[in-house]
Image (cartoon, rainbow, N blue to C red):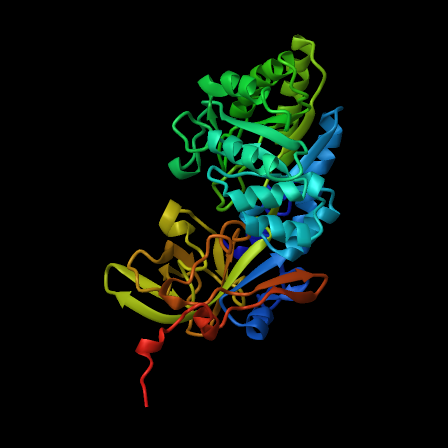
Length: 456
């Protein structure tokens, strides 16, 4: 398939998660790939490789698709939250806040980044299955809504409140609904055997226990059934299970008003992927919630959702430079690039698939099958297996699409390789929003005791 067809068939502005490429991706007559009005080959030369590229338009259009669909289908109040574990930075926090989003944080670092990035504290929820005392204290002091995941959270908060101002804490309660989706075992969080949330059989006891604490202001119920989900029915099932808990909380006197259904909507990584649109996902959840509330004769809650991947994954491209070639006669050809599992651990972790091309040969015929290998000292460091590309030369630039989510946030310094920079593109302008780590930066926290330093 010629690459030109990839762009012609993947420009859904209303639901960017159904695209492989960022919005407004195009190719000039010389076969050079352009994203956000910027030539990717020129970006690679200016900022070096590997480099993460984010298209601002795609991020904003994804946010607006959620806001538009919530307004279209849900007559009650709603609040979309960005699941910042997908990709967290000051700039991203600022963009999503400007689009009317709140934010879901899971660590002190994500909390601080969101607050300094301009997200309103009232619109932040704090998750985690093993929150520290200090993390909970920061959330408490900033009036962030805390999602109770287990008894440990309750015990720590009781200590915090009793040794501080004594004011109430805004809370949600997370439970595991026992709903499974067809996704990777490691990213299924809604089934019963999960480290997240209270077990469904313990929810009522916990709700009753919270009534004993004057500081506990339980405003919402939360559940999440997984990630990279292509099915809609599980979300309808989730609403019914959640409303059972929500209704019981109301009956015993908790002032619940929020129903947080999590996120998990999938994106299109390869041509065979067919995720639901953002619009159909919101429509399914909204209609189920409206009908169920009507049957139960309860007021519509504020509907909260937590998209992450479907906001930012499609906006991202990772640029690499091609280096070594190894041809094994009759078996395969390896093409090595200057990054790999330290900047994208998803292939080795989840066997994730991607779409890629040579950014300055975007309309050339794909005439060889290659395996794209990373540079790390690990035989499993392979980004793409048996992939069709034009003939590549050392020095060519390779772009891998769909890398805006979970690439930087899961990156490492394996082999003491520095993390890439992040470059934001829009309207022909590129801006550095996260600097490249340098090898010397990796030494800044190392200490050499005096006894190891040569004397004399």
